[in-house]
Image 1 (cartoon, rainbow, N blue to C red):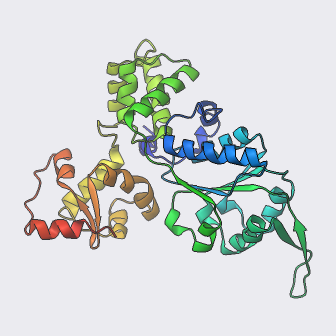
Image 2: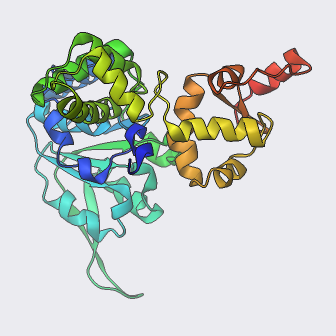
Image 3: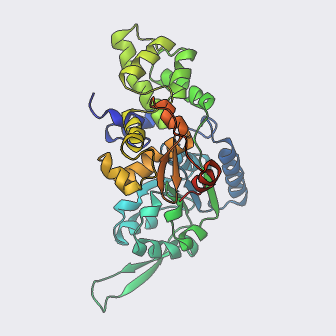
Length: 349
């Protein structure tokens, strides 16, 4: 099957851009999970509405696919204001922000996804806009070019990032609200899958939803992607209903195991065990060994493997755990100096 490893990636896949918004909730009340984040945002929204002021600048960080963009759009609906979305990588020069900032009305929300990828010049341009609600417009180019200062309406900047540590201190300090979204427990993913199946007009039995939830890597985006694939399997190979048996058969065909790991995850673990004696091995070396981009390895595959206890980051490199050995069908090694090594492995680089 083409691009099988895409099934469990939490990143957005281009062909899903049109279908994904249909599954998104239309209010905070409909948004499933992230209860602590929702409660904090509800308080901030209520306070801003009572003061008749824009929402404070907000930063949402956490792994991809957990609903950061959805939360940002729901904030605008709850506040009853406009919503404009853009992304850090596409903002190349200050002029790219002049339009979005100058065309906003009082209280509108400007959403910048992947805000950690903003160029330094764009960050500097945003600071006065966030603090004093003014921007400088360059009237011409060259060493003698003149600039004009223009006031903009008071707005709320909502930034989203998967790499909180890459944000500069001056940028972080300008956000009044900082919230982290976390991976979802299986029971919340079951609710999301049942809700999505109703929107897709496909019958999904509770046992089928349970199987999908447990293999969705704690990520709603993956849960909905698996649901779409299993729906197709159920339509072609069964009576269209996603039962426990149908879900298991479909996921077996898609090579998504009971842990939610796919072929690439298995390849990462087996490479560490078979080629590097279980580690430690450097991330760059591992990326070359599996023919994968370093950032994809560290941002997409490693977080879940570490969270589930299959992989450890140590000062000397990546190490496969005893659980990884068992999962891949190997006997766990008897490492010398267990206590000393355990202490070393607990140090995350």
